[in-house]
Structure formats: structure tokens, C-alpha cells
Length: 434
Image 1 (cartoon, one colour):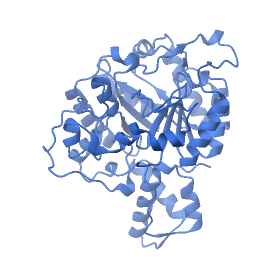
Image 2 (image 1 turned 90 degrees about the vertical axis):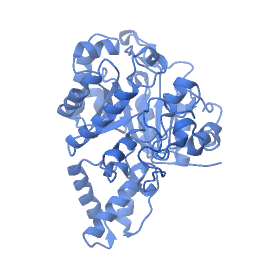
Image 3 (image 1 turned 30 degrees about the horizontal axis):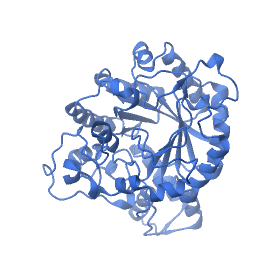
Image 4 (image 1 turned 180 degrees about the vertical axis):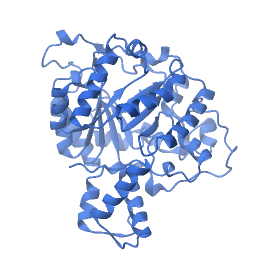
């Protein structure tokens, strides 16, 4: 059976939440934070010791994954900081997906002390009342903006996440600009998968989907060097980039195009169920009973998702199946078959290119470094501190720079020069953990 190296894990650490979001994929246990008992953990959720064990098991495959701690609202779990510190000390790059309502200066400082290197916040409209309505609570917008100010005071990087639906479709460019003005490093645009409460939300049409991806490509150019704009649950985006600019740097190492679920990414539910992604609720087993290593390496579901030759319908016939593959969660939500065609895509195979499109896999998200030049010990040590999912792209970019400037050996100084150039061009930069 094929084994791949897990690069990122999204962990719904608790179902407890202080909002009632319209599109939530995870049925949550709403709580009144004023009545929230200290030390409370839902009986069905993984205990702290079980969480530590799972972290150790993930590290057996990859000690340097990106770990996204989310919920529900992760800050409602009393031991969330102990869990984040354990993961950080293990070597994981830890970020927290929060609605921002509970953030203040004290909380943010504690997050930093416990290994959290960034936060993701959701903004669904630039109109506070519309955002509050979507999030199910009056005052959610104001509380989140207060949280943003705390993050900025602490200089903790944050990104903004926005779900595209019919009601905010025309507002997306304004939301992007607002996120930039706030100081976000990244704007993640999520394309709705109709699961959980999201089944009742108005999804956009395939035509709107295509136009929004084209809009994203333009916005990405407009904000180059200012803020990264990324597509989530939109594997077609790499095909759109290819059609617009076949030599675009965003085709190499850009993690937000292809569907990663079950290939180098997975999700853990609060109760320990391991699934390919948060929006594909097909459990391959429970981590209370089986080890992460066993489930990751031996699951039939993961094996099928890793084999693009098993894709059905137009996704299976498409020349972009290796760089796109369609959204497997969306296929499952609409047909009950995660290998079926993704009907949100209007593209018909063969229209642009009769031959399969292949990209340089050495720079793909999740690949291990493949050296052409000599790296000295200090440079190799610095590279080890780069999240493993980014190393392939970093190696290619650094070596390209070295050749252009006549260097025969890679040093930390050359890596710093490349990082500086990345920051100026808007291509995703790498940031070693201190």
C-alpha cells in the first residue's frame, strides 16, 4: 500500500463553541461562556493524555507538521494551551483557528508562551450586522475586531478566512481589501462544501465559482508583495492559474490549489475520528483504538484518495487530475461517492490541453527536499526549522537564486536573501521557528 508523509493536520479539538455559525460543518455544543465550568471537558472528547499520545504518533511520521488547532472554539477547551505547547515542543508548527471572540491581550500572550505561532480569524462581511447574522450572535464582529487588535499589539501573525456564499459573493474584493488594511498576512477564501449546517446555505453556481477563481487570480496579482490570497476547497484554482499564466510561480509549491485530503493532510474530530478532511466525514478509524501511524498508512480510504487513477467521471478523464483532482469532499456531499466527479467545476476535459498536465513535483506542497547544490551544515540546520511541507519549494528557490548569483554552496545568508526577495514578490515565504 502507498505511504505518504503527512504534512498538515486540522484538529477539531472540541465541539464547544460560543457562536452559532450558519455554515458550520461540525455540529457544536453551544455554551454560555459566563456559565462555562472551569476544567470541563466533554466526556466523549479525547483526554489530554490521549491528545499527547496522538501527537507522539503523528511525530513518528513527521516531526514538523503544520498543526491547526480549531473547534468549535478551541479556546473553550481548558487545556488547549497545554496541548499546543506539547505539540510545539514536539516540533510542530502550531496555529490556532479561532473565531476571535475570546482573544484579549492576556490570552494572546499565553498563546505565544505555549507555542502558538499564528491565528486564523473568520470575517464573512465588512458589514458588522451581516457578519453577526452569519455567525449567529450579535456583537461577534466587534469582539473579533478587538481580538485582531490584541494580535497586532502582540505582533502575532494572523490570517483572515472568508467563506464564499451567494449572499457575500459580490463583496469578496472589499473583504480582501479590508483584511489587508487590518494587517492580515493571508486571506483564505473558502468555497463552501455543503455539509453540516452548511447544507442549508446558498452555495454559488459553477459559473460563479469559475468567475470567482478568475477574480482571485487578479486579486493575487494586485496584492503581490502585500498579502497572500489563497483558495481553499477549490482545487480547480491551479487549472485556472495554468490557463491564465502557465509559467506562474504560484503553480510551483502553491498548496492551496490541489485537494490534499488523505494525501498529505487529514483531520481529527473531537472524539478521535480520523477523516480525510473536515468536510469529508468518512472516518477511517478512531484514535482511541488505533494508532495514527496505522490508520494513516493502511486506510483503504486514504489509499483510494492517493490514487488519481481511481477518479471517476470527468475528473478521472481530465488532463488536470494530477494538479487538481476536484474537491473530494464536494463530490461526496453531492453524490455520496468521494471518487465521483466534482460537479462544481465547469471545465470539460481536453478543451485546453490533450496531454496530462504535470508540474515539477520537487516543489510541490509536501515533497521532501532534493538537493542539486551543496548545503553547508548551518544551512541544513536552518532548513530543518522550516515546516516540512514547505521545504521542497524552499530548496528549489534557494538553489535557483544561488545559480543566478554564481554561488556553489548554500549558506544561511543566501537563504535570508531569498526570503527577503520572496517577501517583496508576494510568493509564500518561509519562516523558521525560533
